[in-house]
Image 1 (tube, helix red, strand yellow):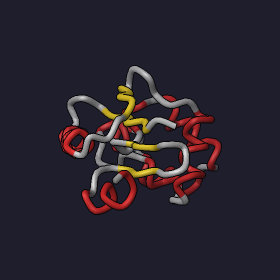
Image 2: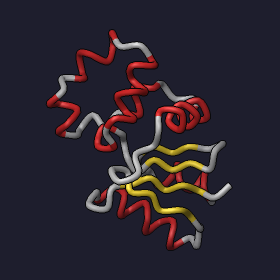
Image 3: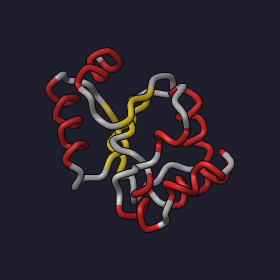
Image 4: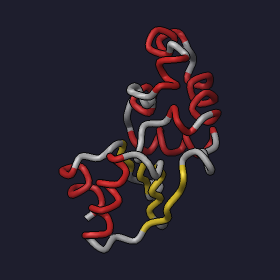
Length: 118
């Protein structure tokens, strides 16, 4: 499967991650997180493949996250409710979100990219 690079073009972290992929000649499908927000099922599959807690998928530094007061609400929400919320607005998703269906990286840490995508 092709690597999906799910990102927001104005995000500096996404730009760094994209540069890393390009510098290492790694092919990927570029997906705009707001124009093509992953569906609830896609997010469920990515989350399950990642082995990470679902709350890690939230962009906790985003305005939308703060506006909705999610810091306090996430604890009481079911996983289904959290997935529905993430699928409702790409700006709530931590980015870049990179996956090939089996491997997943959230955000950009060069060491994680080295281990996962090289």
